[in-house]
Length: 182
Image 1 (cartoon, rainbow, N blue to C red):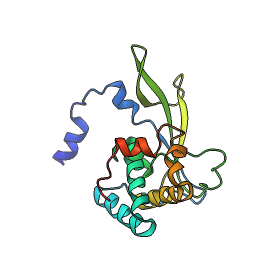
Image 2 (cartoon, one colour):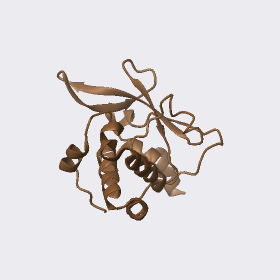
Image 3 (cartoon, rainbow, N blue to C red):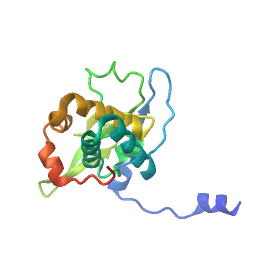
């Protein structure tokens, strides 16, 4: 009873705009209803990468880990924690393919200070200059990694460049990121 009292009457910590911006999102259920979602732990990530290594080989597993690390800020980004994915965005051409998956909708706006781009931040819907992004939610980290591994297998060394819209290629990925788990 004391704990409940404390939770309701404790003094609230002041939050900055950037902290509150990170919580604005909406979950859209799949046509079959909401899926079971299991946020990934470090053990889940290691286990999923080991399965990918067995199924697709060492090279694909390493590229998958590096791409995940690059796209998710080493498995720490808000979108990763809500989707288990490496930024799989739903486009009109993939809407049918992902109809059976739940989606995460966020609005993103660049944070600019002194005329210099710092990073993208998640903002409330309707914020001027915000762009809508719809991400696929994978029930487990393994499902997300398997999708990425199939993508890498299909496109080979061009996969990172295609995935990122040209932001990075395999050489830049290898230079910037070290695979820790595989």
